[in-house]
Image (cartoon, rainbow, N blue to C red; front, side, top):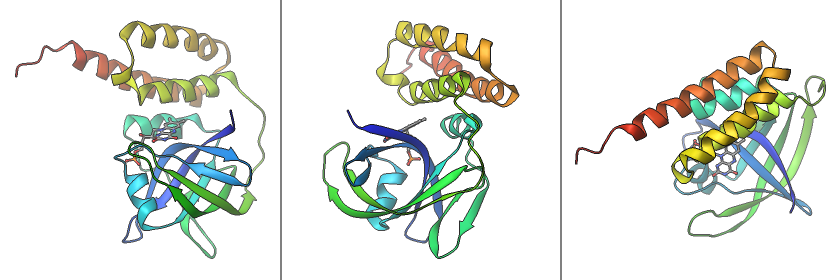
Length: 193
Ligand SMILES: Cc1cc2nc3c(=O)[nH]c(=O)nc-3n(C[C@H](O)[C@H](O)[C@H](O)COP(=O)(O)O)c2cc1C
């Protein structure tokens, strides 16, 4: 399996409006591949505008916030490049789509890296941040998972939160948990029609 870089991708609408979404970019030989599911704004934007920016951040709140519906994360313009990066990025990569492999559910956009720039130091791995990332991915797939699977995954990930989270990671965890609890509550309501 190839390495996947979990990042926040900025794409541009036809009017040039930036859209951010968490995405895993697949590193395969000389290409980085974006594989957004249908339907999504990221996919639509990439078919309209072949330039994207990947922001690499250690702020788990951004991933958590985006899956919980908080989209107003500050962006910073990049000189000579149309898609802004997250202001919180430790580094960003500018990517150009070279070709597209069409697929009914999940087309693959093969990109070349134009430039990578660092903005601040990376201060090491952290289990709680990784746990938030896992829970955030889980929170985007709730309708595909059983309640038992969701609960057992959360119970395991909670250990890393309890042992290694700082304040930001706790805040991020709470955002994802609120999203998952909201889904579970809605799933309990019997269908009326
Ligand atoms: C860490 C992480 C990685 C993700 N990677 C992908 C991905 O590779 N492809 C995808 O379609 N969705 C992925 N998602 C889910 C999308 O971010 C989510 O579906 C998002 O709403 C995209 O839709 P939008 O472009 O309409 O905003 C990921 C979510 C997280 C938290």
